[in-house]
Length: 323
Ligand code: FAD
Image 1 (cartoon, protein in one colour):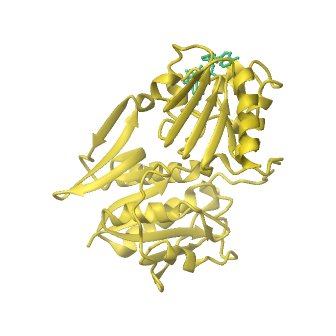
Image 2 (tube, helix red, strand yellow; image 1 turned 90 degrees about the vertical axis):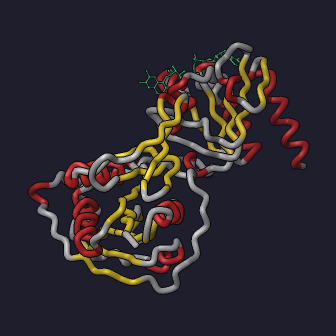
Image 3 (cartoon, rainbow, N blue to C red; image 1 turned 135 degrees about the horizontal axis):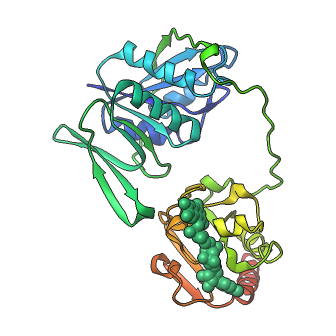
């Protein structure tokens, strides 16, 4: 069976929560090989990689793996490719670094590059990927016409279950990266996030606010509803640009993509660039004073009215119900 390389996103050797989905996607196409570039001092949690379903784990201990931007990840993928041979595809997450590593690998190897894939399969020997274009207005099914396809998979797209592998086969990759040819991170400053809310990209419930909330003060309506529901908070770009909230909250084409069970949009018109980031939510609820707002075209439940009248009542009702 052909191999499918999966680039593992990790924090000092601990794989990111999205790994099982990447492995599951890879196993549709061939035998997954989890590839991980790490600092030699970071102990890699290979049990976690095995329990995600990877039968083979290829480790590249590279001095500077954390600081030399994407060079080590590309080098590790290339080394794994040489080591296992017969590669049918390469899959990464859509995390910024992984996406860039994927693009570089595709350019080096001359293979098709598919971003933000939401589905993939092999049918009669032909590998096809599904993407959404123009903010989800179109679904595009493609196949690579040359080379090995390199794919970035949008999170929460594939729900296949994978059996854990108790003792994955280990492969040690000998990889060198020339620091002189790589951009290097010389300092990091973590932005303090003063919130105990769930992370936006993995929350089950997201409450987002738009320009319709009128001000940073008005945007507190989003916080109130999110607190009542235990939800993450998001925003439209117009709300971010107007300074109502933190830029990290932007949902959409140029923000983050979310796929929660429930997405509540308050005072958001539903521009195609916003829909691109949230339309795959399982249930969408919109509160908007304009009955002609495009958000109602994709909402499962719509409330036409003033968010400042409706949301406080909703918060009270939720609190009363939750005792
Ligand atoms: P508006 O379109 O101004 O809508 C405000 C809504 O609030 C209206 O529908 C109004 O009826 C309603 N409203 C007003 N008062 C109330 C009230 N009291 N109660 C209830 N409803 C009320 N946008 C994104 O969101 N994410 C992106 O990633 C993104 N990327 C972009 C990339 C490009 C290249 C471009 C060109 C644009 C991008 N945009 C993005 C911007 C996008 O086109 C829209 O301008 C933006 O989404 C509009 O935000 P909004 O819905 O909050 O504001």
